[in-house]
Image 1: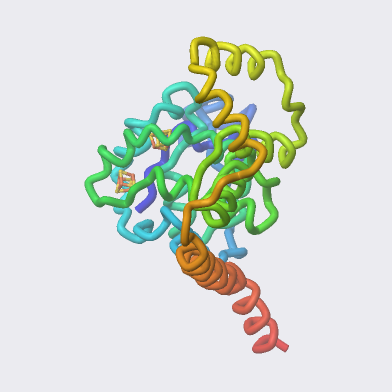
Image 2: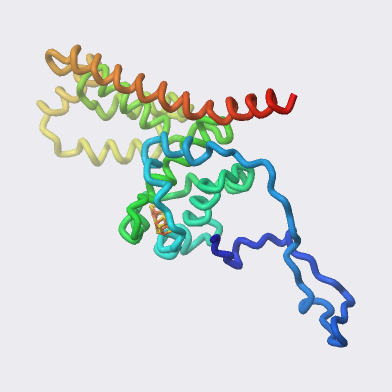
Amino acid sequence: MPIHEKSLIREEDLETHENMVIDGVDVSGHWSTFIKTRVVSDYNETLEEEIATLPGGEYVHRCWQCGSCTNSCTVNEVNPDFNPRYWIYLIRMGMESELLRDKDIIWQCVSCNKCTYACPRDVFPEGVMKATAHWLERKGHTPKSPSTHFDEVFTEQVVKTGKIEESRTMRRFFARTKQKLLQDWMIEMVKRMISGLPVGMLTRMGLATLVAPRTSDWSKASAAMQEYIDEQHEKQEQALSLAELVETAKNDVAA
Ligand code: SF4
Ligand code: SF4
């Protein structure tokens, strides 16, 4: 049974009658406010499964709608429209079009994990928020976020070299997100970082930026990691195509 929070009632769904008398009682204006009835028919029957296939969404089915995640949420405190409990409800019900109405704020989760500690059912709502944000990107509902670009650049470097070389990661991240590398805050941060570092270490850091050293005998580990990534990606792609398959099957039956 869903929880009906006042913040979830949208202005456009309310109806007020200027002049209304019921059983001799004048309930005009504010006293005759009703929530309009509506019919939802565009369910995505595989939505829960699609989210559950993405990392973090695995336990979405456990939710019993207690609301502890939303109650404890850092972002909900400043923006009542940010409502993990409600989105998990929509996912479980397959109400995709309703979920898409909030597509531009779901990414705002700051990963503080307060919800994770508050959840009595080990749903890991923080993971569900991440999975939902990735789902929105993979389905083309939102553009790729800077954090997804960063994850990709980071992963590519680990798989290829077995090492993390920060300045290379940052340069690639800035290039992918079409940002200028020499931004004022960046220049200031680098200045503070390198001031006082021994010359030997600075030289090694500079060389590492140029030659991208690899961990020795890394090729087998790299191949195994890539194989696992490809396997997971294929599994996710199959799950994300489920909705289209179901829709096609429905149309075939109806024809
Ligand atoms: S991890 Fe995200 S959803 Fe959970 S409490 Fe923090 S901001 Fe809210
Ligand atoms: S705290 Fe857990 S069980 Fe309760 S609504 Fe949030 S995700 Fe569901």
